[in-house]
Image 1 (cartoon, rainbow, N blue to C red):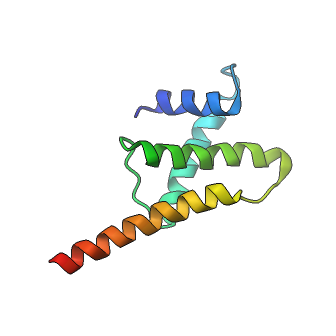
Image 2: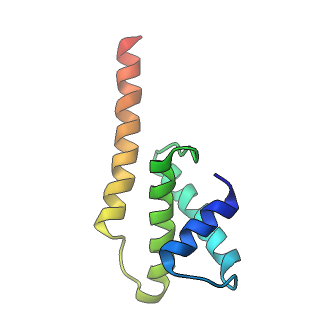
Image 3: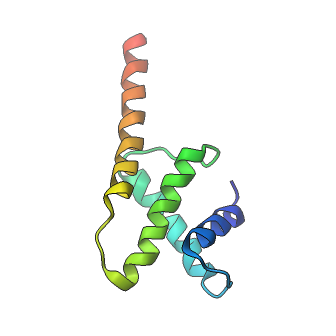
Length: 97
């Protein structure tokens, strides 16, 4: 998925129709990807689930700048599930070898 496609999806989620915030939103997408990978996931932007989790994370980052709210449970669970499922798949693969 291209940067432009990711930006478009994030803007739809946030209800933003102007280009005024595009650069900032692009940074949130990059940061979300980095943070999720730092937690142990390997993101593949051709996989819909991975894109969805990354955009959920970026949208939360945008919203929290005003509210200061902590990470919503659904975002935390989505990131954790992605990390755990990948770690389990790696473990099963090693057992098969």
